[in-house]
Image (cartoon, rainbow over all chains, first blue to last red; front, side, top):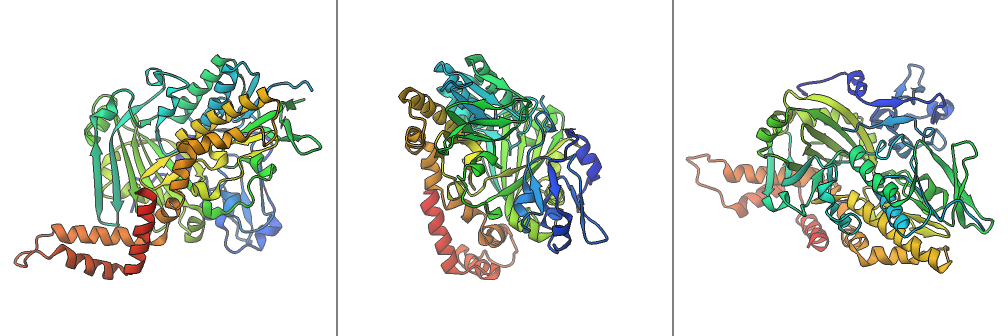
Length: 96
Length: 434
């Protein structure tokens, strides 16, 4: 339906992320393995949560907009621990 | 007790910078702590700011603010898959001082406001994340921990302007519970186009700009859409109710792609190149989700206090953030003078909010966000109204024109809208907006 589809990689390529070595999102794979609704997989605007064939979730934190959607939509207590990245790191929106 | 500062403001967004400006101009020692590399680097919004509240702090702000375009055309658009109904208003009065709405990039606008705080004497500390509150044994907030080495900072007052996720307000217990139903996700593409092309497509000239607010066009996920013009970019975005988005299993960028492909939107952005994709969560429920605004040694302002106004025809936030920050700053100055920085000494904050548009608008419109995001307003009414208008203007001779009352009745029934619901929603809308 959309006339100019772009790949997700291209969509994200325009955003600047200053990645810190410490992950600011921590996912408890054991909790996720029991989750059938996987709200984070649908809702995360950066598509950071990807289901695996084994029924778990792999995630990366590097291209995070730090919006908070994942932990807000998550129905499983303790599955997603989320804090802000170290100062000066993470998403940097564009100035003119 | 000697402290590092008289007040610590966490977050150099519009709320934090306005709080810091007020405090610094009163001669207070104020730290303004920002976790991004510069003020505004973490901030994104739909796209229109209403800066009149700045008249007090920065007279003639329009002569220096990093504005892209002044909104002189404002459209409210109702979309179905194949129809669009637009109410389009234009006023040249909005294109001259003191103006009305303006488009601006937040990293520009917020950095400019923070510069004013620095000019007033505030100490802006960037690239520093506040990791928690320092509290006295009696519970009063007395400073913040940061992620810097030896990064503890002390002050009798902390103003949390740390955004929609406000970990500080939550840590202080000011949010009783956090419900995904109260939040929406905004995703937006900033699309590059030559200025002349934007001027022609949107029928504006010079620095005039357009603000289009959209109901419908979000794949059945409760929310809305928007199109805004900057000088040489167009912002297109959708706002999606979190709980519905998660349940619907369509990803946000796909919903945005579908809006961009709608026949009413696609020609506006044709040929444009994506410059940036961004996302942010919005405290959509406003007054109904607001936390307690003060604790001993602590005030909460801006998105951290859910000050965003998402009331359908009025979509504002930066102005509420700036005002709440400014009033928190004034209350802090007052409390420091009186020597009482407990919640009782900070009571001037809430009083100021209640005496001004901040809580008056929020209180009056407290039912509006829920109404606007309700299933009927989202899914039934747009189709009903669009069909009604289509039949009004379809000339299907040799049939004579149908009476409007009759087609209204037919379309209401066809859309499955109950009269009692229509009356109830109409009454709620009238009470809110009237």
